[in-house]
Length: 447
Image (cartoon, rainbow, N blue to C red):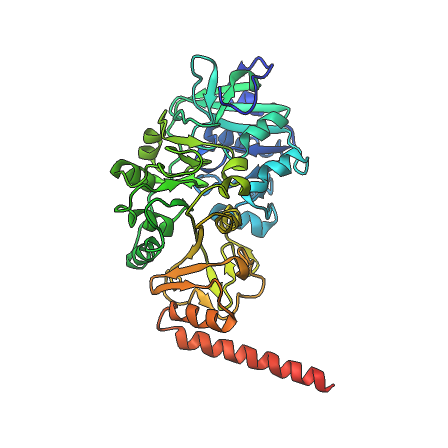
């Protein structure tokens, strides 16, 4: 088998979800399978026991598809705690209440935090497919750092879902590595297809201009990445090495636009660490030898990414300032998302022969009331990608190539791709800020 870890020595018990959760104790730390691979039945049983498990900490990553707010206090104030490296919409109330916190780190670091004991685990709750004839279950649509977590945690509870696809790659665990098995049959969580408007569609077309035939691409989740995938239908011999895969990948593979034939590593195979999409994507990936999921320690590893040629990293952003700094995770001090794999893939693109790093965003917020190209990032905002790492910035109004450009040239290039209604305002605010700072500096020198 190609699983990174050998068979275990456990004799798993088949129990109900409530019986499995009864093994947990207040104040412990557990890690959940995340994304659309969340073990829903186990989470429901866990939340039903939240008062008994007061203070239990959930370590979790991307869980935008979940219907659950893990750490939201109930009316009596009882709450679990959430420690997340990818904040989402359902975390915001808990973040404000102090029952959730954000852990800044690259996706490539997840396994290191576990192996180094910086996040010692008491238990793992995960979802897997039914076992094959040799007793191996597939982690299905989410691998991430779960192989490491299972190897390190003393208690492993598996939700064995008859509807979970058996996805290939380094994504398998043996029944003997589990303590408890909770057998269910229920639909796997889905990520609804995003609605792509005219602005997003044009951003996708502009990004596609930077992607040649034969390139290997990486992309995130949301309207912009999906718009890019739709714009690539006429490309040929593309490859994919990404953190996640969405439904748009199915279209590109079925049309022959994605063949992975020119990839220097993993030729012929679309590689990622998770699937975030609908049942169509899951059916397509089931036992498909052209799709492989690997741990994030592989997919986001700079040494691995650096072996690719013509690698194009495509990432979204909330804001870009006039020097090229990218904020993809917060509005001031309010955490909206997380670093995710952006920094890993941007740096990886710089290491590749022919690599390109693209930051893509619409020129304004959805309501059209504010520009996303800003004079400076607002006070408290995170810098997800520093300006010296940024190459291309793309909006519906064009492409700004910042590599090799000084600050004046960057300002001109970025204002040119801002919404026309905001260009004068952006420049005016920039010059006013610079004037105030120069005046303060002058007064200080005179003293």
